[in-house]
Image (cartoon, rainbow, N blue to C red; front, side, top):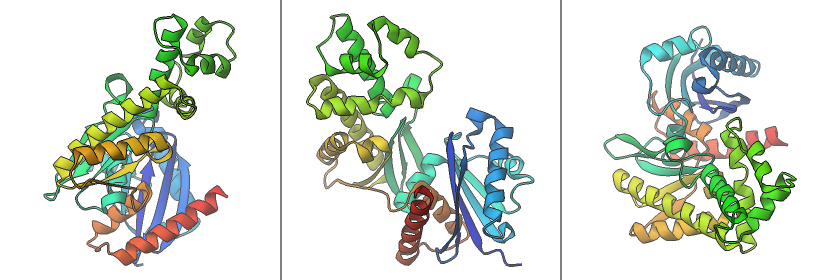
Amino acid sequence: MDRDYYLGIDGGGTNTSALVADAKGNILAYQTGLGINFYASGIEESRENLRSLVQKLNEKIDIRRIKRVFIGNSAIDYSVDEDVVANYKAGILDCDLSMHSDAFVALAGHSLGGPGCLVISGTGSVAVMRNKQGQYRQLGGWGHLLGDDGSAYDIAMKGYRAAVLSFDGLGEETMLAGRVMDRFNLREPYELLQIINPGLSKGEIAAFSRVVKECAEEGDIVALRILEQSAEYLAALGAAAAKFAGTSTIGIYGSVLLKDRFVRSNFEKLFTQRVPGGCVVEPQLPPVGGAVVLSMAEDGIVIDDEIVARLKCEISHFQNSVSS
């Protein structure tokens, strides 16, 4: 039996997506599943979720035809050694498998496996880059205790703190104070202590960034300043990434940079001020597409414009089918 399929997986802590393509970039199967971040859930649960994902793919295509797999896993920052890969895929996938970070496959969606740089700002924030010598590096990505500046989590926490300072009469008046009271139906500000506690996930806390965005859109000076600070940090991060990669073009990804118009416009302005001839673009492919590209490239397939166009079109079709 010919092994002529390529599997790309974008594995997060909550959700995972997978694509199977042939050597021409035709998508044969698309599947979503539970998260495979083995730091968050443990190795056994991660493997079980991966097994379930592969079994669902096998209902659509013959997985014995898969030649190579590339997994982007949010549990790791760089590539992992062969023993880890062998133990992880044992009894689930019988083919060549490579594993790197989820940020790495997101970068591949932008640079298609070549040199380039990408700033990601979602719940967390990080910049990833690859230079012409093939050296890979990331900046930021320190997590919410040490970093994640410019992220939705950071925006949310600054919003909460601004509200607290306003409650105490130590900060500027801001709409955020009233929005906190309304959001949680608080009678007294100190009831917030029962809401914001160590038991909340990063995602639950980061959700308040949308309220900060709304207040900024309504002209709240404090909220606007918070978003300006996010754009300033992300632009500085992007400029450092562009310098390492030797390029003036940077890709952007994540909910903050793609969905917050204020942060994005300020990021673009500040990045182009820092980088002569700077250009800000969205990735050609989503991270799962980047994973497929890396899987194909590791088998020596040249990723040309025709393959990219086919992947882009068909990934969009499959994703829209799932969401509808």
